[in-house]
Length: 244
Image 1 (tube, one colour):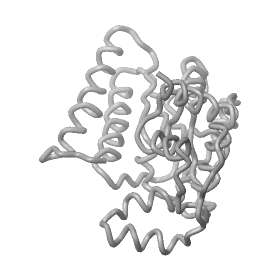
Image 2 (image 1 turned 30 degrees about the vertical axis):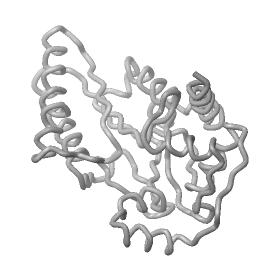
Image 3 (image 1 turned 135 degrees about the vertical axis):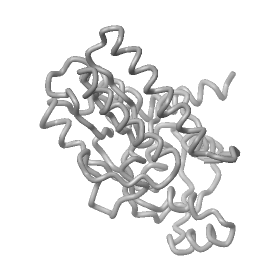
């Protein structure tokens, strides 16, 4: 989110497209029969209308260099699969969290742990998340499930939360009291606009939901780890690091 390269897309392509394709081609030449690619929900887009989640087979709409490079990698892999006969499985996760999580998720844990009042008590969006444990479980399922071949899957914990609900659940996992001030979303967005931080406001206030019904129907897969358990694991690791 803080790229400094002159040509950001070119830099992402080096790793996400060229690097992935080299690895996949080497795998095919070595006799690997199925290649699982961890893509990104950004291939679908940056946001959803509340109550209208992305589905795995929806038309794609990447809007930034990272999402575009992931989409290009998917297409390149499909072409390689047709050329070599290697099965391609694509998994597009939303925000992934767990022990050692970084970036905005870690910041939220830090704010809550310090008891900092946050003006995020009246946000009514819905966002899908996936714990690292549930993501890995889906990947393991896709390794040899016959119905996974040449399919694309979205993945989540199976429960969507608003930003306000997420903060409250994380506070519970930390065993901390929440101090969430109910500022209206329009005021948050206006403030973000004044400071040229619209993208931050969108992540905080906007919705991004994914539908994982395809996973259930095709693979018989449901998330084995509850969101509360996963959040306790992430919070526990965070607290351990704070004491060292």
